[in-house]
Length: 115
Image 1: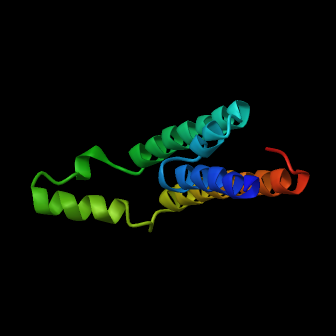
Image 2: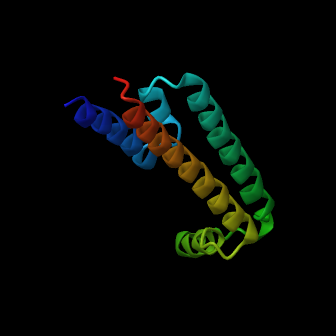
């Protein structure tokens, strides 16, 4: 029965990691150092992405009417830009690392027989 609760605890951590933000699952597991490092990396990626997006937008080319503005924004966020692709890769790497680390911790805990 302990194995079931261990898997359930780690499943909750994975849920938080995938559907909330990377690092939240580590907080649930009380791995505070890793959690704050991952959350700090997420904040850093958000700051970098904001800078990249601001660099890719020219204020003089922003349309004034709403339909044209929607098309302009969708073109910027479509992923055609190398800046957007870089942001996607960074976030995917953070999510992958966070999920893989939780899975490896679960395997280790089950293998060691800890509660």
